Image (cartoon, rainbow, N blue to C red):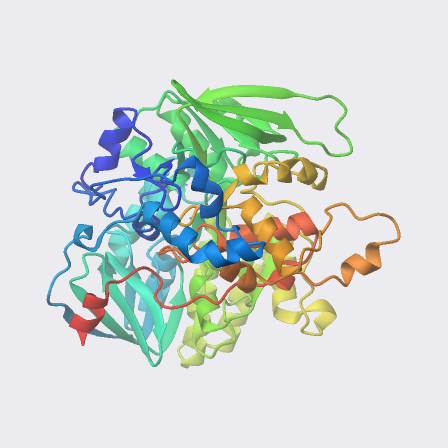
Length: 600
């Protein structure tokens, strides 16, 4: 548990709008208290919001309403006069943007310590997967180094008191495992793994005083999942917090809201809601899926005191004096006969919508494919976690969302696979462990096994992976079915995708129209137009990013790029691979040039 942060004090006073957005100067919330959130804060000139002494702009501004249209990311000159005046107009708008000046940036150490780290196996991520595989590798005799961006080990389980299958209470299990691992391997806490820059592999300490250069024989990526902001009308509200951060605020730092809406009903979302309810908070569990998506915890929701709002879309929201008023309506699917409408007022909406962290596999060029059974866009890999890049593996939720007890099984399989390559494990022992892992996958949920089998062998053993269509996007709270899409995009300008650059769904749709040379792409296709629509090639995510600035903020698209790909694929009923993902570049998190230069 770290020291009570500044932002917890502000929330205790009812001040959720602790930031101003970079483009429009609107009130914004801090969203989360994990290391990857620092890039989002930096987009508006805020630093260390979850520390005791934040750095903030002395003067905040907002774009005048008359200029707001010109400040939009999707604003383009349309006639000769505007084209001539455009440089002047843009400069005036730019002066109104909410940015920090150079003298307001936090102080950086003038001297950086250069640290070289050698290992047999480098493990990135200190959650359940990273700890589990580190323990198994150490038992095989490998020299293991584990790197974790937070100042604690255990990942999301560190604040989870709910009983988890085969683990018991999550926090108790992971604390015990963390202590065991620290006695077996070298652990670097508070160190962000930045990735791959030419021929070097680097990281930095979060206080920017140390630059690490890593060398290894094998690399294991175990960064888990990342919760992302929800997308719904009015989601630019400051009253949105991710699930892990909400649990930290409540359990560690004394945040005591009266009522919360937790959105997302998979295993993690249900456990977030149950954990919060255990703290005496009135909790709603919402999702626009037909039923609670968690097979493991569905039957436990009723006895937990959590109120259920399943099968509902968020159609409107507005900040009021006493909280966030959220309007929900039931899905418009073909079977919906009775219209149901609910209104709730909550202190905050908690996003438990999560995606596998694929930044580093994508940076390395690993194939990224869509597998809804595994949580969305995931790196293609086999049962052992081998990415097919020679010496790089992925384990745990970073390779696809799995129940915790299966993560531990997979970690053992991956460790034995590495051991077999070094002659430390016999082939029969590895095959036996893989067979048991496959059996556990089938017994838990056969879709897990089928997805991994398609990753490894392809369609009918051909090696070709056929992506399915996107049928549900967990973070798009405004549209749970294809019948809901048309209504949701009518209010696309009120749904923010990129919080660093204030890019809305409306901006992205307008950008696509511009890239299609003004051609309107209909959501509903008439009978007889199917073949023409199938052959229609839409702009790639890379082109969309360059046109509207989506994902170009300091957080490098961690909160928006994958979500946008899935939302667009759902809207246009295209495969996520057709849109692709933009190139993921070094570094993984913002790093001052002074730190890099000092390290030299």
